[in-house]
Length: 251
Image (tube, rainbow, N blue to C red; front, side):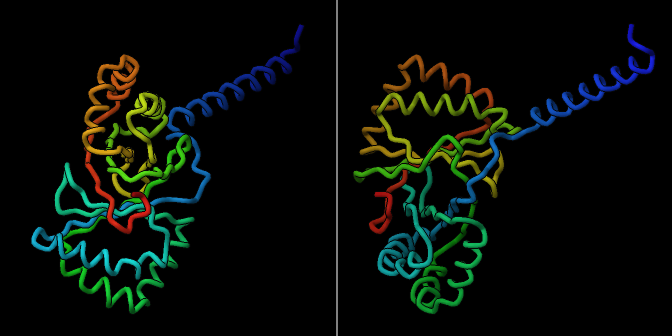
């Protein structure tokens, strides 16, 4: 028979273990998803151009944007064709925030960039927006080998992070990939900007191929089931057709 003192100590250990277990469960409940270990991030920049200056802005950029790209890695540069007008969209890659800070400082001191490109470009810009995003842990950036068009799909999810909607969303993306009608370029989770927002970048040979593929996917039971599960966590969605600029690494 256990002594009274030993019984009290044993019960105390069990109680402490239960408290630790409950604390761990609480942390798991409020976790927002897999830990971000890769410091590499992507900056999404969107510029709204004055409608009367759109053609002039793109001509100026085609001729002089090399003064900007010598400083950091450009992933893609696009004009928005459908879903938005008079906007240009670019994706930049940085190894960490210190690298971005150093590059921005160099840009401010680069007379060629400031005088030959930026000074004129600024007179044609109405608005600009910047977001910082990470590739989700289960996705790697893929660069299509052929030229085509791109679709940027932006999902705004209910608060809670990937721990709440991550699995269902990944399943929905995977089923679209498996249909084969479209190519996944990257899935990005916003860190600075609107939270619980995910950008998905797709590649298609043409807008018509994309339209035909979408009709096919809507008749695929696997896609329908996965999307139905994912939209339970969705607040809104926006699709934009992107056309790559002549100098864009993503063609």
